[in-house]
Amino acid sequence: MSEIRVDTISEKTSANGVAIDGLTIKDGGITATTGAIVFNEASADLDFRVESNGNANMLHVNGGSNLVGIGADPDLGVGLHIKSADSGASVAADCDELVIENSANAGISILSGNSNNGRISFGDSGGNQRGQVKYEHSTDDMIFNTSAAEVLRLYDLKVATGGETASDASDGGLTLQQNANDGKILSLKSSDIAHGMTAEAEADTYATFQKDNATEGGLRITGLSESGAPGIRIFADVTSESTAESTTTEAAMMVNARLKDGSGLTGAGTDGNAFAVVGNGGSVQFIVKGDGELFSNQSATVGTYDAYEDAQLVRAFDLNHMQGVINSKFDKFVQYNKDDLQKARLIGKDENGNATSFVNWTGMSRLHNGAIWQQYEKHQKLAEAVYEMAKETLGADKADAILKKHDIKLLN
Image (cartoon, rainbow, N blue to C red; front, side, top):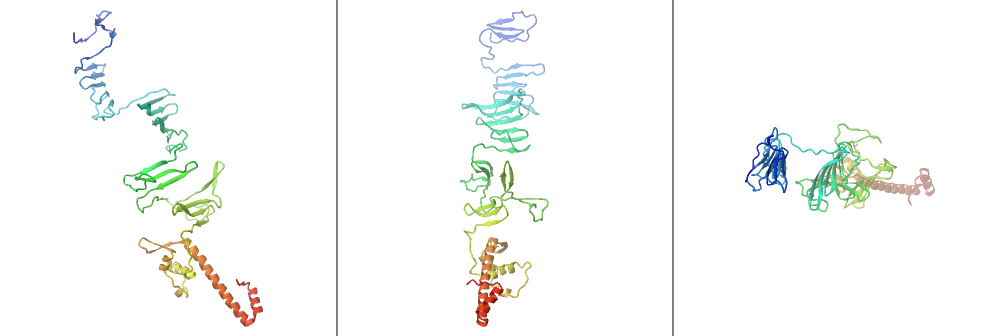
């Protein structure tokens, strides 16, 4: 006999049921006394279907398509297709062993104990949990693992990486934990960028964040630009501004350098370096001290103005901007103009070499020093000339008395 069809097992069936070659069919089901129960061993295009009270395809093995369906005749994937309603969608070939489909919402529930976890693991020949998605019900943490290690945790309305479980970010915040690694903790990329500075970062990276010191911390921010565009540009946008000049005033942008004080912080010390500008191949060029003093390195650009009449150069600067300058009868003797100021690098220039309103204040400081010394020299020469005249006219004793009376000391 090639086929047995059982439509109904009636109450009249004997207690022993119907037995055929070790297969017993009765009210309790189908029992094999030896071997196994095999349906469609001949591999014919035949379906195996089990109906429930309200679904004709509660379980459906489609022999022609080699699919198993739950809830409907399967038509997607290569394995098991659980279908509540047709969504009209297709399924990707590299993830089609299990397909769950509905025309509305569809999903899978993993239900665990209150103090246990539910997980999905991804394994290969190197390990059966190389990747994992896990929910810890005892702490309500969602955890993602790759390479058999935790890389991301969502908990207490926070996001943390690297196995961090004590985030100091606020709700909705992000904590990045790189453990003992010393590389970049954050990189920003764009396919529009190709700066070529690959010794610093990949060519399409335009910004990175990392520890400044491998064992002591600090933050290093690096911006990378293809051309003369700024590597880093910072904007401070405010709705109002402060115009006060005091120790408690605020500004649109502020730099606050602080020093460890026990477990807390205090302001930078009077002589502490609060802010520095690095240039010239990595050397510090400009320092702001904790008390506001400014220090500029002039070893590379230092220059004096001994070739100029310094006082006239200072006056030329005033005459150049003409802001609140009172005319002097001696101005006609000033022999310099803005070209001389620009040549001396006392004022700025634009890309075309035209003078601008920018002022080189370190250069002006040196110029003022030179002007003071030149005036001191002229004062001494004048004093010496007057003294010589007094000696010729009144004699040395009276000339010395005049110097003493007016507290004038000659250098020689």
